[in-house]
Figure 1 (tube, rainbow, N blue to C red):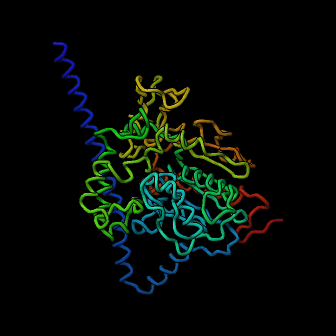
Figure 2: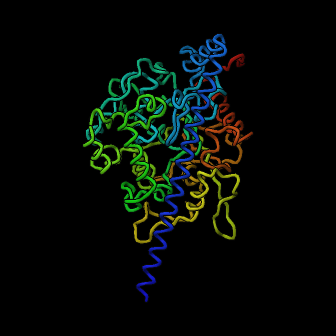
Length: 468
């Protein structure tokens, strides 16, 4: 009788897990289709408009070129917007903007397109060559260890080739994009780019983080990462479905489709032309490709993976740091629950609830000394709020909590100023109308800080403005 009851309970739990997997997969698939169809619809609308007026088309083309290629001799350093996981830069998904048009708020903004699922390390290498120009070099040792080509995309002309200590840059990173910038700054300090021996940490003037993934997220375990090691996948999970889809997408290698959206694994040479059917089978079985190693984004976003990554990263005394941490939870009778229903995107609502109730398996060693479940309950549906505030693992970096942006002026370099904002993880990207006035408040604050409150020698001269 007891065995029968235990069997029924196990079957019931398995049924619930499969139901949750089905619902999560369906929601993510529908949202991906929505983004793709929105981009296509926007492009078709633009094409029809262009057909109606060739004169307008020529004007628009000139405007786009001017935005993509800011004048190299401008007095203002560009602000570089770095997208997060599953993100995209300018030139992908047609005219759709990952940052919902925030790049139009300043005359000198760059929006690089990096691998959407590639590792933090690989993305940092890509970002460097996007700015300086040249052929992306992932490093010989790293490439051999991970089983991919050492070289990648070629940038004939860098988007800011004069970048150096005297011409530093502002970086704004969303989600994993913030950690990409931190890794890039460390690489600059370590002089890790062959042929560029004069790099140092002062090439980065400021880092602004919007829902930045500094210390990992417990969502990775809900999506399928093993909490035992933070590296491997559970046999049946959302990430396994994602893995299969990405491998097939890259293997099919449909040119127009990959030009529209690319996961960033071209350096793994997984196309049918290069590996054939046998190579596809090897990738699907996990014997080769990026998912056979830890050289993709999810292992970097586990608590263990973030701690390993952070152990080599520093905050530097001449760089300004500011972080906006988002949350969509609150305490009700001592229990952490979603703070609203309508205010949370359907893509994230289930995960907000699950993350707020997450408990680390008692039979698994904690991801770090002093770990407590309650510290990681507040979240925005993708990342835990504590993870977004400032670098904490394995060592906490100097920081200061602020309630209002003006509380931190004058800014001091080398300190992580952080503010907590009521929003979910995608509140300030993709759909500008959803955030409303808060969208303008956040980005205006970030851009104003870069232009008016962050400088090393003398304040920057803004257009039509002189200093006395």
